[in-house]
Length: 147
Length: 167
Ligand code: FES
Image 1: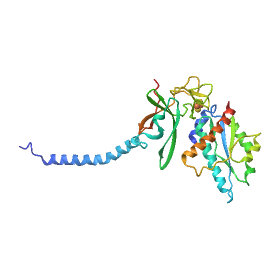
Image 2: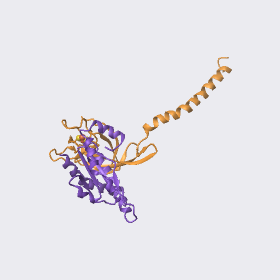
Image 3: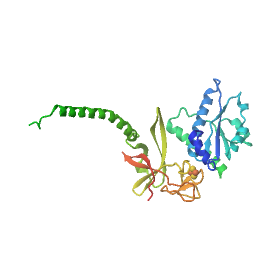
Image 4: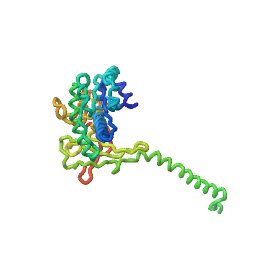
């Protein structure tokens, strides 16, 4: 499911089945030295999560990404966000990011961390294969939570 | 004599009907065209989309075949990639849509070790037989959709999605 009008309507009638929220955490950096890497990582995470959504459409909702910079990161209360999502009925709240600093939160949060792969130079076919490979790594992580 | 003659009244009648007919046709034709056209509009290659799958390479074991086509959504054109599970059954080729009939996840072939040789949906454990028939007792309530198949120069073409007519 995406967070849009149609999908959400379906979500409301099928909460028993759509029990997982996938929340991308995007680290944005704008200084000249880092902006390229940051935008590339963003592209990677957005493409990958859309792909995950397609695979698990009926079980998870892809929440719009939460973005932060170095300066604003502290304002991001992920624990509260998690609780809020849980109280609306998501049994599993899973964060996905390319920012490794979140791995230190793995006691309180379910975090999937992936090193970003630059997709911009790839043609469509290669891109798809790369994303498929990444998806294969994510599937067991998700299903191990479910089953 | 006067029978063969066209009277002024008749002449006017004929011509006006004729002209009126043309005018009506001029108005109606585009309307009819607009009404019918979208239904006739098709993906490239008539109704069929070319894939890179060689027909000769298709076996009884289902494989994933990707195919893309352009989709026009109002003013926005995008390229859509779809996938089908393709295998040979006797002499014919079967292409099934991977979209689970429960809530739309993507099903995989043979990915559940406890139930080999079935399509499996990891979302809520939905299962389908090789024909696409849903296994009773699992969440999906209907069979997987199928695609029309065709062949050109040895390559597989996929067409419209059709409801699975399971014998
Ligand atoms: S979406 Fe496939 S079993 Fe629920």
